Image (cartoon, rainbow, N blue to C red; front, side):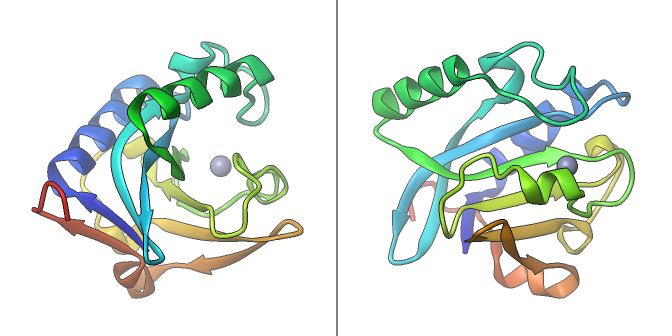
Length: 158
Ligand SMILES: [Zn+2]
């Protein structure tokens, strides 16, 4: 379960929308802490801040230097990667390459996909949410099932 302050969520969605400019995907790592199976998001790091050409190939690509920088940021913030998020041009379904290339290949790592390059109004039930099971297998949550996996809260530090 991902728990996220609603103000931080809006900031995240806006940043993803602006970075994609309506013409390309954008993405971010969600950083925070894990407490009792709950993944609390406290901050995020944009892929293109780690590596400007993250979206210049057919799929999201980050070289090892980008991951080294990510681990440094995690250390500085005393946080870990709890999930990732990226946008798709239309519907928010995991692509085959998304399935085959987990950004963090750890069991329980969660990947979220936003529709329409994060443009326009959309409800949480239109997102795709995938929890990594290992061996390139994912649990998929869509529609109303997402509402039990992605919790937006007004609390700052639950
Ligand atoms: Zn994708």
